[in-house]
Amino acid sequence: MIRDFIRRRSINLGLVMTGGCNGCDIEIVALLSQRYDLEQYGIFYHNNPRECDALLVTGTVAKQWQEKLVELYNKVPEPKAVVAIGACALSGGIFQQETGKVAAPVREIIPVDAEVPGCPPRPAEIAIAVLKHVPPALASYRRKS
Amino acid sequence: MSSAIWYLYEFARKKWLERFLDATTDPEIAETPSRFRDFPEVEKELCISCGACVFSCPSPGAIKLVRGEEEDTIFPVIDEGSCIRCGFCVEVCPTEPKTLKSGENSLIMEEYRILPHEKVYIADEYLCIRCKKCLDACKVGAISYQDNLISIDQSKCVACGDCIEACPVKGAIKETYIINLDEQKQITNTLIESLENTINTEMEKIRKLPDFDPSGIVKLEFPLKEIIEKAHEIIINEEMILKLMEKVTDRLKMNVIVWNEELCNGCRLCVDECPVGALSYDENTGKVQRDEKTCLRCSICHQTCPFGVPELYVARFLLKDDVILITLKPSKISIRS
Image (cartoon, rainbow over all chains, first blue to last red; front, side, top):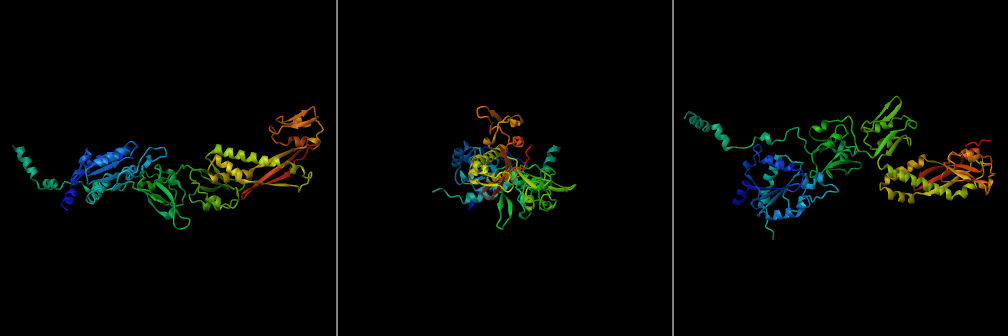
């Protein structure tokens, strides 16, 4: 219980960009900036997946990323959560064309706890999704048997 | 020293301390502004199922037309996972008020809408009886009545086809596919060729017609199944093939020339008259020969010949269920004496 209480106040995020137009990543940068200021909610950003609790996945998951995304997900220490951000991560978006080489959606590659639609979603929408869905997902995470 | 005291005083101010302890973002910043273009909202009752929103959508699979539980209700459904909130569907929606609403885009009522249609509708001023039923049937106000003429505004038309259903005259509003023109040409050519072949195989039956008997007509039937299979190899759209065949058979009028060589006396009047040189005099037999491939079926030889060697028949066609009915009649063009 204490652990969950602490986790609710300190979420460590990692950002994975798997191909796409980079718009969602720019919105996440806006979240980190002074205007939205993610750290006031106790959310911290890390570059190293081994330091993260939750992964933010953006982009269409290009074919080259498919295996690497699973590898990266496995490196995140348990308990872990994944938030898929943007139309690309949810369905492939405008890149899901007949000739496209796209492995989206993300939910078919790694387990996803929360999805944020939009192209790109507003920074506030991303922050709300992270605060609302990541702590319960971490609390209910079960170690793979 | 004085500045240090001023800083101490500044830090100790209550307001500053409060702000320091409660450092949060202004709620106004996180709020969505009213001008923000969110996912479109759908009002099912207003939809006329024209499909303009689906055509305009740049994201595959973001918007779909779905059949409702009640009969004849079709409305768009938006998949938020693929929607990119561009608002194109809202801009092109032609209903008033709009079926789709999102942000300020729902206020845009474009004067000229360019929609990627497959079909074009044109009113025929000769066949039109000016009943004005199409004016009521058109849901986007593309049809106008002016100077005793019905005209369809192509920039407003959404190609729903309601005007054709309302029109009591067949052919007064013409529906034309403007895609795959080369394939349409191919289908038309194969259809006409195979119709001509059927007539040629029945030539003996036509010869037996009593001369200049006005009631003497030959009726033939042409099964549609084979030609449709052939057309499917060229194009897949079945509705398009059927509409094209109907249009061809409605308009087609074919001249058939039956050459009775045994009546020829070798006068060679026709040879000079023929505009393409399809007729040639054969000195061995003393008779005129006709080359079927270059012949235009213009009927000039029929009008010239004093012995009735070239007989002219007119073939007309009707598409009924799964056969094309062919009717052959002797032509009534007078023979020059």
